[in-house]
Length: 338
Ligand SMILES: *Cc1c(COP(=O)(O)O)cnc(C)c1O
Image 1: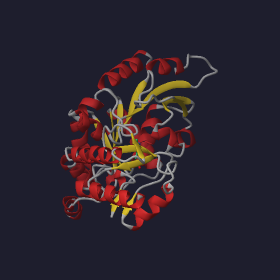
Image 2 (image 1 turned 90 degrees about the vertical axis):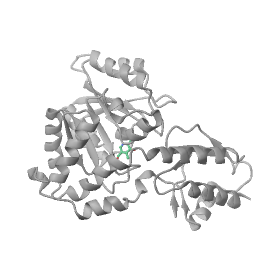
Image 3 (image 1 turned 120 degrees about the vertical axis):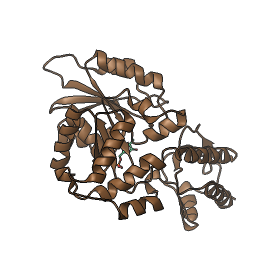
Image 4 (image 1 turned 30 degrees about the vertical axis):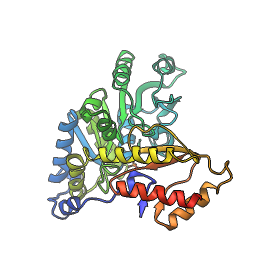
């Protein structure tokens, strides 16, 4: 089976399963789990932060960051397409009493700095207090330019805002640019990173920040029910995600480019340029008298090729889809279309 829905479907590697089986553990709520502590120290060092916190999901990492930066009645600026605005259940508003101020994402995923500047509220009792700028990299598979990040950091600093990165796939952004992750995270006060997407760990994300922020986040994590006990079983796989899976992402990107180029040869698809591990395209087949996308997806699913059907097709490459898998998928697609 080849599952193109997301890189979240990746299975842990054999090395991860072995490390999990033999991990030294303790009660992490007491701070006693040596494997969790090792992962947190390693991550803080690798990404250039004082402190790191191992949490159960990217959603929780983002929520903890928002709640640690902002108080009740504060506001964070983010993109209309931001995961922590669109796809996290409104957690910041529901659980943090923090108001989002979403702004238009440009075609390249960025938010215009002039839009951000205009949206920052003056000190006035009518307004929520703008505290935080939250960016996402990659966003929709797109990499934000380093110069943009530097300018965004400067803008945040000038207006006394903190700046957070939803870096669920920041490792993809780093590999695509041939740079280190730390070179991207240097512009931010806090960063969340998913270990369980392209990096293949079964569970877990990392939140990075200074000691004060991580202490606050650790308190909120406990309140949200996210204090885990012998979590070293998970952290053991998480460490291997950082040491063994980052460079490998280049293969996912190459496979995404291959998939895009093969689809671009077909009249039925209009393919967007690929930057990382996501291929976006429009299906034109139905308008050309071919079968509807839903039917196509159902037929391919029977052959073991799974993808989600939305307005645009999004196909995600990852460890468990080989170059061979990409070619087989495109062959099956061609067969189903004729
Ligand atoms: C997946 C994702 C998250 C949330 O991660 P979960 O572990 O699924 O909660 C946050 N931000 C972005 C950009 C993501 O892609």
